[in-house]
Length: 389
Image 1: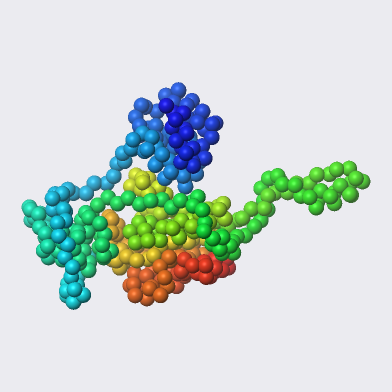
Image 2 (image 1 turned 135 degrees about the horizontal axis):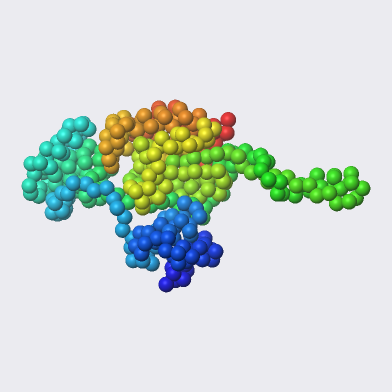
């Protein structure tokens, strides 16, 4: 059975070896875990997966072979499913859209709490209750300039919170690049030095020492030349970033190739009190942002990648996160990051011509001290030039 599992991982292009597989079998023989699938999942991942970038592939292969793996997620208060079944779709004129009033974040949250206590039946096409197809700030399938989407799919990307469990996809570090230009631009940031064990042949020194030794071979070794730049990349994932997956994967893949001392984490829209490395398990495997500030040295280069397109509340309002009630505003965390790491930049995949029309982009630019660059060849070159100073 486990031999077939081993080949399933190989088919998924996960670099597992026979030695690691034998280690897994030995652990199973010694009963280091119980018989539950969850325990076997963690044991197999620890023994077989050497790079966190392959966690997503491992999850997919594991789920396919064992017919799915369940995860424990945060639960929201229940809302009757029938309330969220969309049966009509209204199209509003620009004038009608402009006439709709914004509640403001605090009033919006208070009003939702009131409705959850008062509402007992389904509503559709209205402007007040939790429902579908209308202009109410609560529900889905309609239009409101600033609401809470409950169920359904995003249409206008104007929600300030989303009442559902959302899944994102990890960026693939093995994606084949369509161009070498990204790698070339990133190489501006490299800084080589020789240290560590002397394990590389120093040919010139060997020839010189042999000549001085009357022709007797005198082999000289030297440390390998390595890139000493320490890099941390924070990637926005999900929502409007779904439009930029291909280009972001190319950047991610190129960075993984060029920088051996690279750490990466994911966030959604804005950085708050935690980040994560695996989008499938982002609610159970989190990394406190405080740990990033204390663990990594101040000379680490920091690059944030995201379109900076969100509700302004997500940046300046405690509790403004679209997914949960964050205790401190995103702006506070961005200021902590930029104060800790002196060399930082933000890469934005959205065309620069659109930045001026989006309030959140302007706010992020100010918080990043105007160190925002487009995710283009020119933008990469300018960002790397700034970070290499």
